[in-house]
Length: 388
Image 1 (cartoon, rainbow, N blue to C red):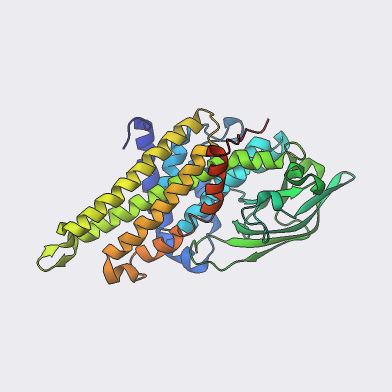
Image 2 (cartoon, rainbow, N blue to C red; image 1 turned 30 degrees about the horizontal axis):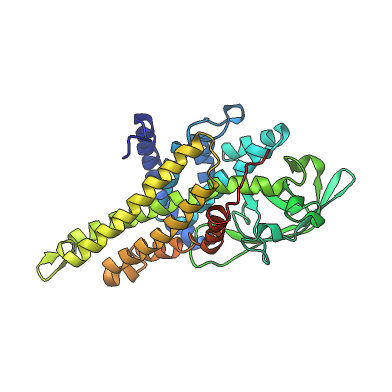
């Protein structure tokens, strides 16, 4: 482990987390993968252990630790072979809660951030829409001011935790005529009248619930506005850096897990009198894959270091997600091949890992969108700036 970024305290935390996941989570994974529902007790246990509060202020029950504790949490979640469970945890902790912490009022933080840290409430982030996809500025959901309330109408899709959450962080246009300059962020209780969620059937991430959500004349108190009205687009863009780095770290971690599993299998599987890790073709292929994984991992650590210092890393986080998810798909695909016929069997981890990994280049901004963002930065010299 790279001591440039990880202290002895980090290492002790990693070992403790590994023990916790092995004892409290792994025995339930197969059930949750089959039912598509993660039982509430595990959220409470995560809260009790402080895992949801790693990066959050002590004033609201958090631990206010550096970003490398978050990196460790993300890495270890990928190594229990349930992308769906990992997604449910980090979507709550680093998508929904990030907005609550950064834009929420003291009232909102007391009523949503603290219980989120404790594992008593589950959150989701609602940005993507059926017609918009990665085009955030093109969203159609509106929240029109009427007296002391906003009236919310529209729909969102591909929302992780959308079915079983307690609250939603929702992006909507408060001034549709202003385009992306007219988007605002709101916190909405799931049981509010007019909110409905439909569960979606997915190729992978089967343990997590993913929803399409409809808002039909939902009345939101003005006090549920997060941050300033019409500043939502800049908030979303600013937090995309963390989301994309999260997905980059997820990718290098699952690739590392795939390589570790494949090597163990190769060291035991014999053909023609020798284990298959002795065949040059396989050894050299493995070496190439390992090298690519290490490059992404070291790059992601460097981006995490800069983000932890407060730097605005939209370009670097975009590169992290783009290249790491591409690498992970390649690694997992080839590791399944190393296992031969067994790789195609559901009794072995590679089949699920292949399905789960495929979402990497899609969620949180497709690879095609990320390439265009990078093109604007490096070719057109466009500057993205943090929200003020």
